[in-house]
Length: 364
Image 1 (cartoon, rainbow, N blue to C red):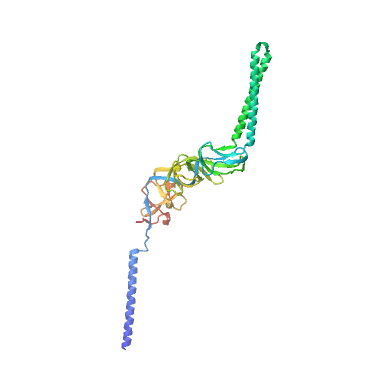
Image 2 (cartoon, rainbow, N blue to C red):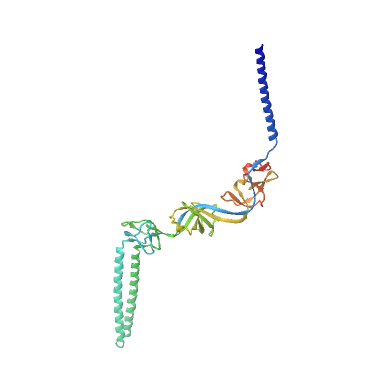
């Protein structure tokens, strides 16, 4: 009997323990329901900012390349075999320095022949002058016709001298074309001919540039091409450098390249020459297309998905949709042109709002 009583007592104690656990669970659940009240609507916590006007700018970020302000491709105006090349890639030379010589033996012969013909014409003119002087000295015994003929012979001989002088100058000028010279002070960027090579007027001999004055060239997408104009300020950072260079837009192409959809712009970089930047180096360009001292801006994430541009603001604890007008621009914050006047509590992420009128509260 004692064994049965002990078993019964154990069973009662176990039932009592389970009963206490159940009561504890029920009490905890009741307390949670009392505190959290899940049947009541609760506001969504959202990140906000107070709308206020202030300074802002629109910046167009594009990549460009360093280019010399003055660059030419040098070619010869004549054809022939290259006799010598006096400049190599990277050489810095003065204006008028001989860069390359083309064989001009035939042209030199033409110059010699023209000079010989000029000398003959000058001798004929001198003889005509002597004959005229003699005729004038014998005026009393020489007919007027003989005098006129002598004067005509001098004029004709002088015209022939003038003609031959012009031919000599032309031949000498043509001979000069066989010697290619530097058009201005600059640096050889590339060389396209070697001694013994036959070249023509279509053969690029040298790419030549003045590297003391550099600028950047970039292509602006046609979506923003109309925003770029001469005189805009630019902050440039060459690849591999941390220092910014102040620049200015100095050229805007009047056309958009149909094949690329880009508009060429050139930016003056006054301080670039001191940095020894190589031609073709990538440079990051921030073109300031608009600066305002007193404008309202909102983050792009604040724009709500609605038929018309709008943002959410908090009014009396609820999300209210406010239509806005803004300047569309590839940036995180957008300039507003209407819709908000300042002082509104703006919800920074419109996706956090389920619908207009939803309960919301500023996140602490």
